[in-house]
Length: 390
Image 1 (spheres, rainbow, N blue to C red):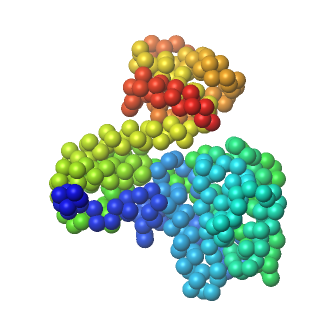
Image 2 (cartoon, rainbow, N blue to C red):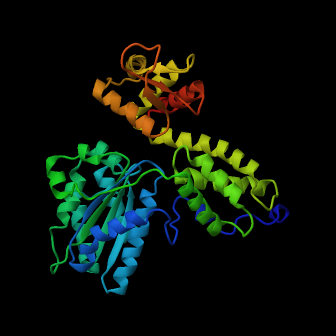
Image 3 (cartoon, helix red, strand yellow):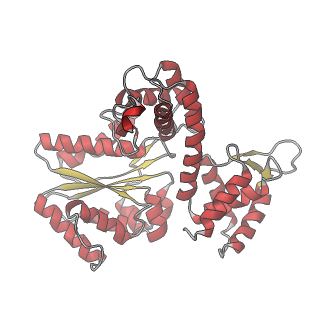
């Protein structure tokens, strides 16, 4: 059966997966340079470090963190310093116990998932690191999800962990990744152990930068001659609305899969256009699933009020939000928090908010949904909220 498909346009499709880390990152040189400066004491003085990578979705935060830690580990080996790293997906492991268990499992894959207190697990981790004489960098990806659910204790514990020295050597560094300013979610004790100034900012990619990223991934993933320069530019244009490299890479992969299905030896513009439509649907679904509950309720209110009009005011949305909260057994959050939800949804690319113009009295914002029918969005959110997801 598979012989009838002909040669695939892919020579290494894994190079288009979200887990893949390119040997060299394009347009994140400054961030890598800043991280190298911040974590220099780990190599030179056996000191621990903390830092936050901050920026919108799809701006290369996670892949930069992984690339930096892989390079630091390799450099450590060349200088006889044992360095390793572990990535904790805090949206999947959003309790302190689950996060620490995942870190221990990096060294003990068969470690039992119950039966130990957090203090006991911390001591087990300490012994693992002492045994290996190892410095561990812990990457907390989407750290805000963990902090919102479980509080800042884990930041304090792991930061203070560094104070326990073995032969003058500190054993743990932290690297947090978040789209949001996590310092609002931390208490004074945690902030005192985490350096506020060590923030590395990530901005959205420009269309030219997205073209370079798509070109690099195409070179790694596709056979030579499959994708021409005009098609690379079309992928960049298709994803430039969000400045999101993940979206560009997903379009590239789906376009290649469509080409394979059609038995085409090249990826042509029509494959890219079809891929964008398919990728947009899946990326919207992914974004909805990643939202906190009150963000979903706010977006549900927006979708309901937009079904019969092009724009709505924030006042109209807030009233609909209060109704949605009542329907789903939630207490509406204060006006300030509600404004924060609107800003987050705008930053996430799910809504478009702007200052009101003529015809609308007073100073307010008007909101629309630019890329998905309001009725479709309402149905998707109702299904998610109906499943009782948090």
